[in-house]
Structure formats: structure tokens, C-alpha cells
Length: 478
Ligand SMILES: Cc1ncc(COP(=O)(O)O)c(C=O)c1O
Image (cartoon, rainbow, N blue to C red):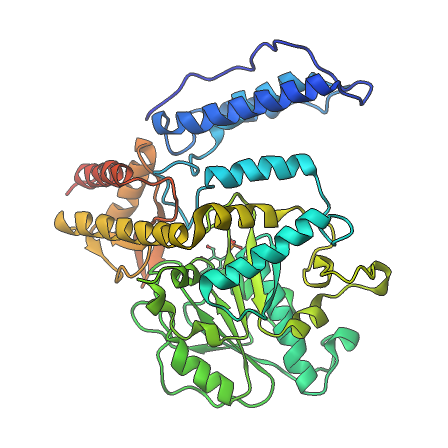
């Protein structure tokens, strides 16, 4: 395990305190400069430290945190020193280039810097009155997301915490609209006595979708499940007849295989049946930003709503997701708040399109990512990560490791013989500190999942990580 010495809270060069709740301006500057220095040191140090939490760091943090609430004010510089000294080593180095767990994007430096500036602004971003600046950035950020992905320019959107809340936002609009079409005002009457909605999903739909169905009163289990193929794609053909209010969900990017449901036959059938078509595009929808990969998501533009993460492949800081709904009025009908908040500004007020009222300035990071990457930079990011996934798959295959998926995107699913041995390889890799890959289940087998989703991953990172995985493979008994 790579280790670093535990940085104890640094003695502060200057004592600052907010006993009077008023900090000197110079103290604020000093504190922020210290935070920026620590943040930069942290990021620069990632390459030399373990990718998982530094050995023993979580235990040291647990001991350090085991204290009662302080009786009175503390010294801010010491507080920051504590956070850095005990907190930083107990983090996982997901901001670095060798973290391949779950589907995790690193934050592009410009977006982190924007996040810090927006933090200083401390805007409440529910309306154009509460933050004119953020409201304007938000409109442009949403327009640029649609332009980057070729989605309908008239679609309305919400910036939310992530893919799950993007589902919630889109599916609330879907639920209300299909019930309205059936003559039921769910906004006023709720679901008691409402006509039933048929919700149709693929057998490999992401768990977040079921959570959202539960939160929306549609039920996790009251779904019609369509069979999938060996890559987790819905099988086209033999679709059931759609009768009455219905929502069909398809997936751009299976969380394991990265595979895409075949959009065109599904949307043709769903449209003919009058269903609302929703896309789980958490990370895969960003393929549309790459001229070389957009074909994977052919036909997805025909949907009614799209849920996607920004903190995955757009590489902005957590937390950030985007919900887009083709029909602006459907989103507004589900999300508009009471007249008490109608500010008559004549501008777009986010509070009428999002589940939240008060919220942070996610638009700033989304806008910054798209402004700093541009079309070509975004396409390069997606292309490079997909090429890196293929490098992983090829390198593992050459050494006899079984690759269980067609590597079409940025996801690799690998098995190292039997389940026990695969589990051993995953543990050895995580313990090595060289890189971090998690485990998953795929077609009844334990597998390692490698997700390449970060701007920070270089080809050298791939080579170094591949070497670490193959070393673990050999040590595991093969
Ligand atoms: C396909 C898919 N959908 C939805 C989600 C949920 O996204 P979030 O964790 O941002 O809520 C994920 C997260 O991994 C995902 O991979």
C-alpha cells in the first residue's frame, strides 16, 4: 500500500476567529488562500498516494471525530487544518486518473475553480430575482447541453443533484401528463383513484429508476419488464400492446456493459401506443457528443424526456444532473410552485421547473465545462475514455482474462476465472493502492467493473493500472 505521513493540523500562521461573527476581510482572504493551497496540494499529491483511502486514515479520522460538540467558537485555520489533516487522507482519490469505480467522473480543473467562485457568490438560485447571474448562466448551460447532444432546442430543463433526481423530475412530468391525457388531474387529486399507469422498463433498468418509481407512487414492482439480450439491451420485437396511460423507459448506457437499448423500434412502438418515452442517459447519452460514437444513441432524440448526469461524463464536481423534457408545459405543470413565488419578472424562474426551491449554482460548473471544452473538447473526452476502455479490455484479454461485455463505450466487465478468484483480484487491486476498480454481478457471475469516465485518466494511468490488475491476477493464483 502506498502511504503518506499523516498531516496533522498545521500550526496556523495567523489566528482568525469569528467570535464576533465578523471576520476581517484579510482573514477571509487568508482562509480562502489556505483552502486553495491545500486543495491544490491535495490534487497534486494524488499521483503519489494510494487510490483508495490511505491505510489507517479512516480509523484516525474516526478517533479524531469522536468528540462532543465544541462549547464555543474555534479557530477557522485550525478547523481547515483538521479537515485537511484528517479528512483528505481518508478520501478515495476519485479526482485522480486511476479511479475506475462505479461510473465516476473527475472534476475538470476549470469546473472546480468555477465551483469555488460560485461558492463565494453563495447565490440562492431559485429564480432570476434571487440570482440574475445564475439564472442567465443556467439558460445558456441548458441550451448548450441540448446543442451538444442534438436534443430538441425547445426542450425545457432542470439542473438537479444527479441521475436519480433527473429521473424523478422527468417521470413526475411523465406521470402527470399521461394521467392528464386520461382525464385525471393528479396535481390536484393525487394518485388516489387515478387510472393505472403502465410503466414499461427493460430487465436491466438501473436501480435508480425503481427507486424513483417508488417515490412517485408508481411502485417498484408494478412494472412490465421487457426481456434483454446478453448485453442488457431490450430485445426488439414482441412488444406488448400498450393500452391506456403508459410510460416506456429506455436506457442509453447499461451501468455494467455500457450497451444501449435499440431506440428506434422501441420509440416507434411506444409512440404508436401513445406512451411517454423516457431515457435513462446517465452517462451513455453523452455519446451523442462524439461524432464517432453518436450512432450508438441513434433514435434517442425522439424521446419525451432525458435524465443524465453532469457529474459523470461532463466531469463537473458533485452533485450535478440534468433533466430535459421535450414539452416545456409538461415539466412546468409538474414542478411549478404556488403563486406566492410568482415574481412577475418575465424571466425563466428555475423554481417552476425543478423539484427544489432554494438551490446551489450547478449551472456555473455545467456552463464552465461546456465553455472550456467546446464541442471538440467534449467529443475528445468521450472518445479518449472509450479508447482507454478498449485498451483495458485488450490488455486483459491478452493475458487470458475473460471480458464479459462488448466494449462499445467506457465500461469493461471482466471475470478472472471463478467468482472467488475474481473477488480476490478485486481485493488485491484495491489493496495495492495503484488503482481502484469495484465489483459487480453480471449474468449471475461476480465481475470486476472498470469505468473510464475521467478527463484525468492518461494513457500512462491505463498502463499502470493494467499492470496492477494483471499482477493481482497472477497473485490470485493464475
Ligand atoms: C445508468 C444509470 N442510471 C442512473 C444512475 C443514477 O445516477 P446518480 O447516482 O447520479 O443519481 C446511474 C449511476 O451510476 C447510472 O449508471
